[in-house]
Structures are given as C-alpha cells and as structure tokens.
Amino acid sequence: MIRKTALLLARQSWFRKTILGTPVLRDLAGRFVGGDDLPAGLAAVRALNARGIKGSLNFHGMHVEDPEEAARAAGQAIDALRRIRAEGLDAHVSVKLTKIGLDVDLALCRDHLHRILDCAAETGGFVRIDMEESRYLETTLQMFEEARDRYGAGSVGLVLQSYLRHRSGDLDRLLDRGSRIRLVKGGYREPRDVAFQAAAEVDAAFRRDIERLLARGISPAIATHDAEAVAWTRAVQERLGLGKDAFEFQMLYGVKPELQEQLVADGYQVRCYIPYGGDWATHLVGCLRRIPAGLLTRLARPAPRT
Ligand SMILES: Cc1cc2nc3c(=O)[nH]c(=O)nc-3n(C[C@H](O)[C@H](O)[C@H](O)COP(=O)(O)OP(=O)(O)OC[C@H]3O[C@@H](n4cnc5c(N)ncnc54)[C@H](O)[C@@H]3O)c2cc1C
Image (cartoon, rainbow, N blue to C red; front, side):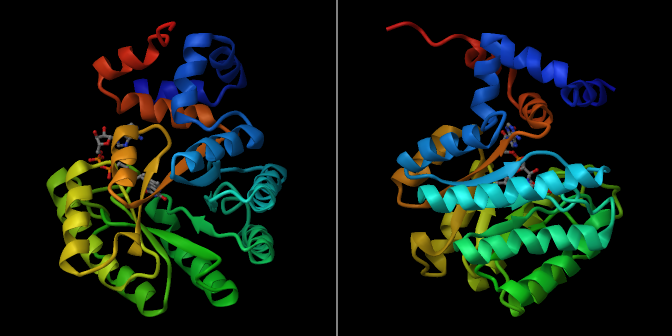
C-alpha cells in the first residue's frame, strides 16, 4: 500500500517539481538520478567518465500507453546516442521496450527500436534492451534476436534475469548465437511458479549464470551491488584465467559508489546505469526504499561548509 502510494506520487509532475524546488530533496535526488533532462544526464556521464566509470543513459519510465509518448522516448534515445558520439563520451543507451511502445503496438515498438538501432549503427553506439516483467519475456527475446541478426552484437545487447525458473536455457541459446548479455538477479515481483522467491535461491542461480556468462560471453556485464556476487565474479574471472577487462561490472548511479570506486581502483571496468528525465522520481523512490535509514539520514544532511 505504502509502496503503491509512493509510486503513484512519484508519477505526478507536482511531486517532481516539489523535489526539484526543495534543496535538500534536490540534492538527494541528484545522488541517484542523472537529472531532469538529457543535458543533465550527459553531465552525469561526463563526471563519471572523469573518474574512470562508463555510463548507460536511460530515459526513465515504462508502460507507456500513448503512441506520441513512445515516439518521444525513442527520440530521446536517438538524441542521447548522437550527443554521446558528438561529445566523445564513454556511454551506452539502455531502453525498455514498454517505454517505446510495446504496450501500444508491437509493430510500432519494433519500428522505434529499429530507428534507434539505425542511429546506433550510424554513430558507433550501443543499445542495451532492459528486461521487464516476465509477461514481456518472449516478445523481448524475439525482438532482441531479430535486432541482433539485423544490426549485430556490437550494436545491441539484452538483459537476462537469473531469478526466472525454467529459463536457464535462454542464456545458452543466446550465447550460442553470439549475443551480448547483461546479467541481473531480476527486479520485478513475479509469482513463485515463475521466479525464485528466496534470496538464497536467487543468489545461487545468479552465481551459476555468472560462471556460464563469463566463460562464454561477448563483452559480458554483471550488474549487481551485492558484494558477495562481486567477489564471486572476481574469483571466477581469476579461475578462468580471464583479464580484468574481459567483462564489466554494472551498478545503478549513486548506489554503492564506494564499491564502484574500489573496483575501478582494482583495475575492473565499471559502468553506471543513469536514469534521467521521464518519470525519474519512481526510480528515486525505488532506491530510497532500499537504503538503510542511517545512511539515508547521512545522505540527506547538507555537505559541511569548508
Ligand atoms: C545496471 C543495472 C541494470 C539493471 N537492469 C535490470 C533489468 O533490465 N531488468 C531487471 O529485472 N532488473 C534489472 N536490474 C535490477 C536487478 O535485477 C536487481 O533487482 C538489483 O540490482 C538488486 O540486486 P543486487 O544484485 O544489487 O543484489 P541485492 O542483494 O538485491 O542488493 C545488494 C545490496 O545493494 C543494495 N541495493 C540494491 N539495489 C538498490 C537500489 N536500487 N537502491 C539502493 N540500494 C540498492 C541492497 O539494499 C543491498 O544492500 C538492474 C540492475 C543494475 C545494477
């Protein structure tokens, strides 16, 4: 109930304006969100790149029902790819298919995806298709495979979720066909016959998939803030005799920044997923819910004057 209310609030434009108009809230939002628009997202990428961290820009939001909004979201991804190229930034673009019209019409969504990928091919950019709720899984796999066959693994990659039961064959099949994968635990509420519920089961499936992905993947990405999963990934990389640059860690912007910095200092590749624009406040609410109260109080405190 509280979660639903918070998410409903986060979708209201007055709520976003209140956050932006209140200094302490604006500062807090700035730790987890790239900003209200593309220039702000690009500024976040620039700052990360200066610290040796790559970016993946995501015009935030999902489940768009209005065709014009879907077209605008596709336009945002195209603008981001062009600006990344023009500014020579080290960044990708991440897209959710329901943000570019999957709930409106399959053909419309495919057209938008292909327009984005035409731009990626033209600018030497890379687009990652996020994975959403399991009801979109088959369509997303199909759209991705079509796109990979048309544009190549250098232009488009996909996210796979380890928490899904009975789907471990997807990883093997996609790797056999030369796909670029970001592996995650999985971020949605799913029924128990679809996804593991217990953290121990999810963690075990994630560790199993990390090993399979590192052994065979093209530019694999392990997206997690879980220190044990990070340690497991490092151990597998050493055991397989892979270089530290054979894969990348990915984390959300502002989450565990000290772990991100440590990995860069240790010689690993790190990429931050940076939500900006759209309904960015829903992302902020999601992050704040996961932060321990003590840390939240520290983050909300204004920086001391020097
Ligand atoms: C770059 C990236 C891309 C992702 N893309 C997708 C996707 O396409 N599809 C999908 O289903 N899921 C996606 N996810 C989410 C993922 O599936 C997990 O839900 C999420 O990463 C939490 O799992 P964890 O591996 O960090 O481990 P956990 O055990 O859940 O968390 C480890 C620690 O990190 C903290 N933490 C985790 N997430 C957050 C957060 N948002 N804010 C603050 N603290 C946090 C936890 O509180 C805990 O302390 C993505 C995650 C990342 C990092």
